[in-house]
Amino acid sequence: MAFTEPQVCPRPPTEKPEFTIGTLRKAIPAHCFKRSTWRSFSYLIVDLVAVAALYYSSTFIDSVAPTWLAYGALWPLYWFWQGAVCTGIWVIAHECGHGAFSDHSWVNDLVGYTLHSSLLVPYYSWKHSHRRHHSNTGSMAKDEVFIPSHDEAEVPLMRYTWYRAGFLAVQSLLGWPLYLLFNVSGREYSRVANHFDPTSPIFSKRERPGIVLSDLGLAAVVYGLYRAGLALGWPWLVKSYVVPYLIVNFWLVTITFLQHTHPNLPHYEDEEWDWLRGALATVDRSYGILDVFFHRIADTHVAHHLFSQIPHYHAEEVTEAIKPILGRYYSKDNRNVIQALWQEVAVCHFVTKEPAAKPGVVWFQTSTKDHLVRATDAAAAGFDADMAAQGVKAE
Image (cartoon, rainbow, N blue to C red; front, side, top):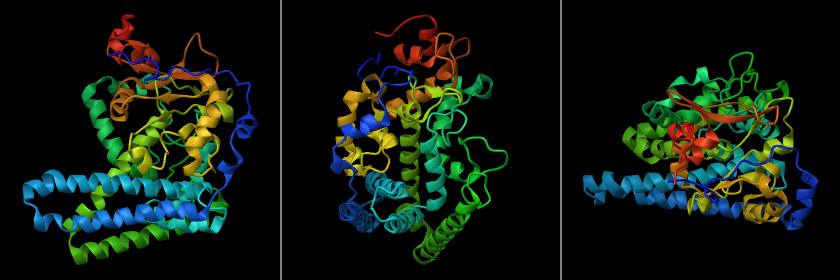
């Protein structure tokens, strides 16, 4: 099946746009820039009540349901929805890191630190590295995460289906802790980088106290989980916390990967990159009803990269306000996201310059056993690189 507009967004222009960030700002209603601490807390309270209700319901599963029903349906339902709700809590903590939760920085940091620590995220560590991601989005030299390979020789196995399936499984469940621990998929540094070492090259000297504080928060949560496991049993800990935690990891990595990986999105070399075009090298994707649980982080991501201090409850209005100005610079993909996840991995193998493209701009390419084709052509051919190599477009 071919995917054409409006399902797969086309390549955006790579020339410097005529509009500026100031032009976009003027198009946004003034109230969208206002942050209400109480309104932000109302969303958080709803999420926390949902977490408590789901957990309370789960305590009856093993006692009232036969094993086949408990593990065939009820526990998976708990894991899925608890993971979805906790992903929303993760997003609220992320919003705290941007200063979008409240006008008061101490409220942002207190709430963000508490929430992220409970989800085993080093709050200040990630806050600092994520700020650099927003400052350098789309830059091959300075972006912080999901930087594509520049060399086909580095990704020779991506042409094989079995490898891509294994790659997705590892990335989806372990990609987040691997990034935090070993900087997997992150930018290159002169030495080993991770999010737990205060002397890591990711951080400046003045940021080091926050890294230590983040580590202490994680240590406290891990110790609390250890004590809970001793008291209530390790099976309880796995079912109640670990599996939902892995679901959160899945959604976090999937959302982030798909926001910045698309056959028709450019990346920029250092000499060509600028902040505005880099921020526009992102794509909005809808997760259906989960957009509500995820507090619109995925379907309004372009607006988020342009105005990261705007709270999530204004993000849809902001998106609609700036779309007419963005025009072809706005990217929205309407495929099912699970389908898109597989298809993006199938065709977005590495980036390189194209002869007809603007200098300093690189695009995803697809490596097959016998061919090298543009990822955009593979997408137009129904995500079949062999068909694309033959110049055939899927009907």
